[in-house]
Image: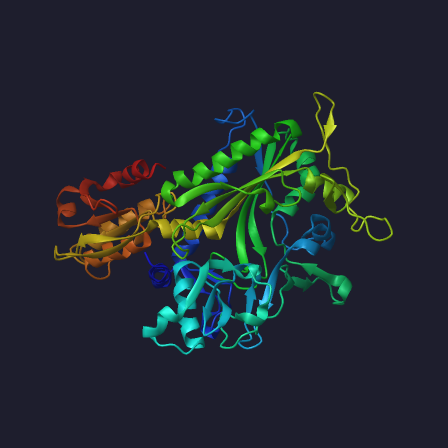
Length: 536
């Protein structure tokens, strides 16, 4: 599948639209249409149900060191600025960017790659903003134009090795920028903080500056004591949250994969320090299996542990759940979710002040006068075990998933093209989204075969009986074959058709989206039939 095909389908069938499209759009922001909002809601609800509401702390899940409880929060998007100073985001939450003086474009430093080439006694670095095979073709074309070569002279280019990151280049004077025609147009890389600033208060001074949250996790940490006191949960337990986050990405790209406004599904799981390695392994496996259970292919999904140099300064271990998105080069994977062992870094930071690692230990960062650079809340965020009377700061395991990236992955996995008979019985190309039934935006569609002979009335009756229990759709426009195709393209698992035989014996035709098999059932059994096949 080409990514352009999926993007076109998403607009045509109402899954995703460019935000503010009538005004030319706004880069990095997306609107979910009628089908998209149902799909994303189903992803969120599947996550919340599987992680929170259906969890029974009396049953020890397979692989878990002990029984545990789960609960939830919904925290404010704007928080006290000191939260982001103690968490480290104020100082450390940045990417490096480079600008092109010629094209006036800006790039993320770590996302620019290229190749060295020698021609006509000159050695230059040809840069590209894309990777993989596309970058190789693009750099070849750019180099030929720069050296004024024709296609027959391509052998004159002496390429020095494979694609490498721009970060390996020490002298930008011999670099041809991604959109430049002359050498040396890229600036030196500099930091760019990713948090969105705004103002809270009527005066609008610098002291009123606040930030849109770049992650949902900190709201959970600062409410740790409130949750313990109000619900009397016992460690180990998890606090879950679904909500919007905002990051001022330098170069949003790849459809909804990298956006400036996105939704997270996060868990902060609090446990005793001595059991935290076991819990880390448990959550790695549980979250990986969740994607498999909802239909992602094992061949396109992987669980990758971070190398030592990738780890955050406070991390005891991090693993990414990654998916082979079609916009990536062959063999490349993009992050769906991170599972991190955060130790006691977060709770301690909000108690004592911003922490940094020195000589292998986390200590409070001091300013030039030897005072804490950013003061913590001073509140006691430790935990008292009422049985052992032991007080300690819990360790945290954080499974952090992107609702938008998960939705995009399920869309990519579901997209399929095959052959199916049209309304005349002739095999034709069919586009179908083979969603897991739990995720499908519409669970069933109800059709009258024709708009006469009382068929619409019977179909409306069935539709009305199903609607309180399932997300269903009624359609009586155009030939029934075309109606089937429309439902295939939005991923509806089953279609129910009222025809002439219905008027004789009260049975209807049920059609399966994936197998195209059809069978008849009494019209009064439609709800039971769908529930059994949808496993609801």
